[in-house]
Length: 256
Image (tube, rainbow, N blue to C red):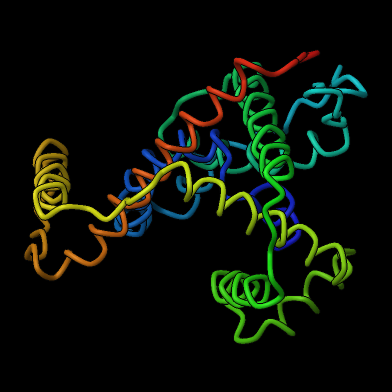
């Protein structure tokens, strides 16, 4: 499981992931409501209500999914990333009752992977560097995000799934350089008090619209998380702007 996540999302700059972030809170609330529904339904009805999980359609994927300034997005890389993205989309669709538009999902992922290529190429063009310390810090963060206590445990888990330490460190170094590129493009992303308060009011409004009876924690309790949320939003917007600028000057062909 770690390997799929790492291959598909290691850069943290996927535009598809950014576009999907808006549905995460809704999914979480649906998950919280699920146990009550299951308790009320007999086991037979519960099983009957659970639709089969759909399978990703990998038919007709070309050997070269896209070309970005002469560099290829391979079928192998695309299928690995698409399988992970499809599983996430399928779980959300199962909860919402909506069908998955696989053609749209494939096109979104292709655009996302093109954007990743453009960011990596620009980081290399600017000769950005990742120190051993920065790579180690990022590995520690990734280990914690995957519920592991140490970097060694994280590297061992990836090794068991076929990713050698050298490959992992190379990908993490790339992530560090792209993060530097985005940070330079975004500038100061420190949120103002007004922006944080606006984010709190937005959550409050969304909760009211959904008819939730759960009381929202006080602003001060959520302030730190809201600051991080606003900061991340600014970085995401800067990423999308940068990718759009790079795309205008790039030679890109998508073969889907």
